[in-house]
Structures are given as C-alpha cells and as structure tokens.
Length: 88
Image (cartoon, rainbow, N blue to C red; front, top):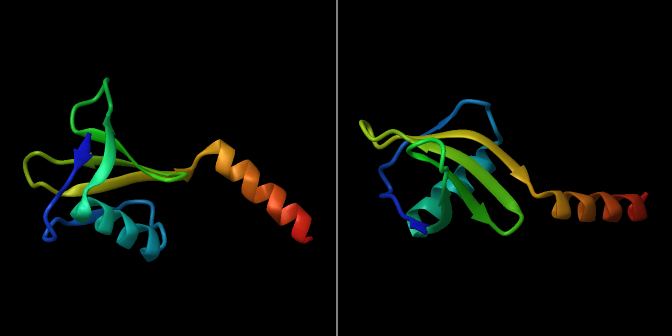
C-alpha cells in the first residue's frame, strides 16, 4: 500500500535517531511511501525505502506519527560490512 500524510503531520522521535532519518521519513510520508500494515496491531506500519525500514505507529486520534524503530535490512547490512572490510 502507499501511505501518504500531509506536511503538517508531526513525527515523534522516541529513540533520538539522527535528524536526517526523521527528515527522510517525513519526506517519504509526504510524497507517498511504500508501507505494510502490521497484521497484529492496528495503525502500525513498516515503511520501506530501498534497504531501510521504518517501523511507525500513526495515532488515529491525533494523526501523529511515532517513529519506533528503523533499521537496514540484513542483506544491505552484510553488503555494507563487506565493503567496510575491503576498505580497511
């Protein structure tokens, strides 16, 4: 599904991720992001951009986005580690 929110949507950064991560998530949500609904929890989504995944909750009462976690997929992580090993 494509998830699109308006530019006035607030993003709470509970784990203090770098501002670049939050800004990228905001841009994705404004322009339309590929998202997968969590089948076990209502209003929770995995937003995917390439190798990065953002796990978010959208409050239906306030329309506020809560960034709960973000990570790089295992395949991309392994690739980055291999490249870092080559550079050392």
